[in-house]
Length: 312
Figure 1 (tube, rainbow, N blue to C red):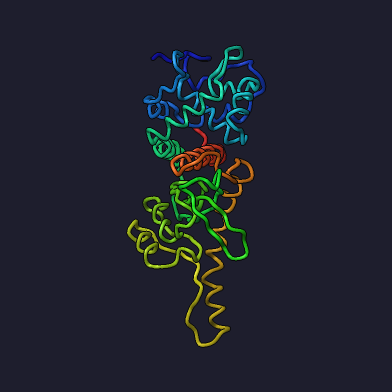
Figure 2 (cartoon, rainbow, N blue to C red; figure 1 turned 180 degrees about the vertical axis):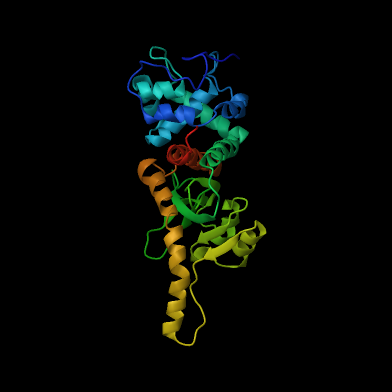
């Protein structure tokens, strides 16, 4: 089945005279979208008897939904109304835009083809290359995200002391300590131990790896060293001659780690406060992974506007 031809002749062109310039116009030129489009070529999620919407337009629309915390219904309405959204996705000022069901079909196709991982790697790789900074360290931590429903059979309950129990998933994240770009993600049920799942969030050549006490233990430490890194994990106990010396040694070891690893909380805060990742929108581990990785891609792109080295 054929695909619709929309808006501009090619993606990446920003039309003039279609409203005020926004940061979305800068994001169009931040990376090379051609490889992204190649990853999406396998998708053709048209309604029966209709030509398919270009998958790159739908993918960009999903990013808009993350940045503005929009449901599929609200996204369809916003695309019909907002000039900056239309330009970013590649639609001209007067043509029709996708209905809600197009985003539902597109998301199902992302899951079916497992494209969320390859899209994340492609875009993050380009952004890391643009930053042109020597990597010195990695932040590793996990955040709990409530499930869309307690009926989600892939999610699990978790209870932390002093906090209410949560039914959901954990996003285990490895981020660059200097640029705060998210480099690796692993999604698991909420009851999976951080130290067990943490190795899946380690990038290659991580440098010094800063993590809280949940990651202490041989399993995580060995994984860090196997990738050429050095674990810097918060300690809960040390030997010394007396209590005062013990506390002083603990403080001297832990304070630098706390100071650096605390940067990852800003990432999680942005995801949850600004991008709506307080709760999963859809059921199942696979769709949870798509939501988290779309959020990470959206976050990295916005972060990329700040850290990218200008072309000369």
